[in-house]
Structure formats: C-alpha cells, structure tokens
Image 1 (cartoon, rainbow, N blue to C red):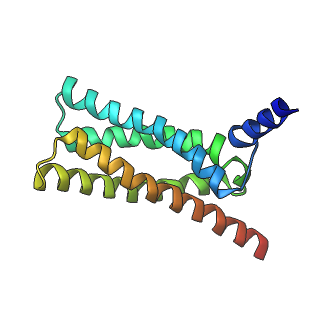
Image 2 (image 1 turned 60 degrees about the vertical axis):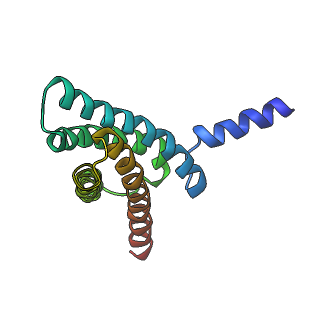
Length: 152
C-alpha cells in the first residue's frame, strides 16, 4: 500500500499533466537546470574554444538554452496548459525570451564589466535571476490564454 502511494506521488510530481503551480515550479527547476547546463556550457565552449567575445557567446548560449527550455517546458511543465495556437504561443514565448535575453545580457555585462566578476560566475548569477522572470512570465501567458478562451 505504501509503495502504491509513493509511486502515485512520484507520478503526480513528475509525469501527470497538472496546473498546480507548486508542481509546475518544481518541474521547471529541473527543466531550467538542464537548459542552464546547455546555456552555460555553450557559453563556455563559444568563449573558450571558439574565442568569441563573451557577450556574443552568451547570446548564442542563451538561444540554445531557450530552445531547450521551450521544448522541455512544453512537454513536461506546461503540458496541460497547451490551449493556444502553436505559432502564437511560440511568438509570445520568443518575446518573453528576448526580454530574458536582454536581462541576461545586462546582468552579464554589469557583473563582469562593472563589478569585475568572472564571466562564468556572472552567468550563473544572471541565469538564476532570469529563471524567475521566465517562469512567472510564461505562467502568466497561460493564465491569460485560459482567461481569453473562457471569455469567448
């Protein structure tokens, strides 16, 4: 009996489609963590091995991380909230991403150039700050879409 409860809990926590904000945020931590590895890892590769300027490398890494985040979030975090046209959803998500990229680049520049923090540490701090923006902006997108759909 206990095993069944535990399996049911794990199923709800990791698999079942849900609108529960706490579960979504928990899942988003995993998705965001994986996307952050793609983002930060790409930044490092572009900067250290391809000798790109750190802010350009940051933009390229951010875009790769954003794509990873979008695909995994759509599949795992916000699967139940898939109520809008895919092109419209991606366009709005891209706008949220561009704002996130602007914030990320600003934070990277400020921490690296003004506070003289090593660019990789700047990236980690920036990623944590932008993570919060991305989750709540994306959640608001789905709440708004649901409201519009109900009002029709």
